[in-house]
Image 1 (cartoon, rainbow, N blue to C red):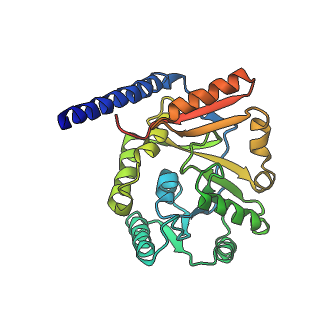
Image 2: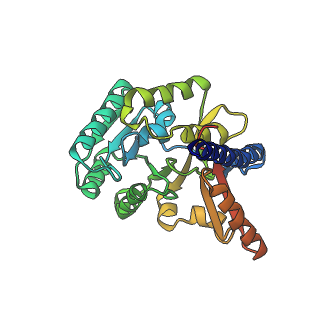
Image 3: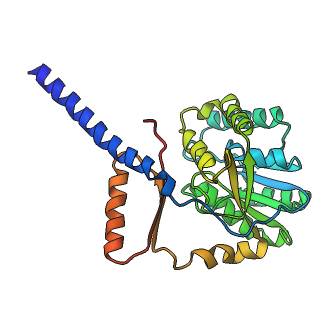
Length: 287
């Protein structure tokens, strides 16, 4: 009887794996037809310093590594935010990893304490950057969005400055600036990640790599950015004029578990009820 139950359990596991593999294979075959990020109007980076605000240690690497290499007059502000893991041990580990990465790559940096609004404002007044880089507001992590709110409150210090979104958790689907990466640039970037951010070895970094390698055709890899003038950032006109009323429902996320089936059901519902529905899917698990 025990053997029979074990066999049944194994057969069910194999069957569920095959069903999931079918959906993943279908998604992979549809990849060439998946919408690519759209280049709006290519813009240029302002001359002068670039101030990169990193809410978490490794945001500056994931989002801006090649940008920093291309613009060596960049300075990184590390905010010391820790997501859902606030404890002294984790804070010390993340700070050591951040410092190790910056020093090894000769990147200028400042480490902030607890008063982010005051300290970011003071750094902007001291450095007088032409460009301030922050995580995209279209992001599931509330601490990435928090930095957008802080920068918006500091608008009086940012006259004539570009506010530039960089990508962390969610792909940027509308961009106006990119930094192309050769195969060696790409390898160097992720070798740095593994070397300096050992505490993050459990995160699925392949989802970041996938987006970098598939966002622009005929380029090995690239980092995408969206440049706003300070007035555009305040009013958000640069995004609204292209996206307003275009979609009723958007989903940007990973294909795992039963999500692909659920997404298809939602899409069918939207189609039947004349809603505009957009999906951007990427696979973060191994086959």
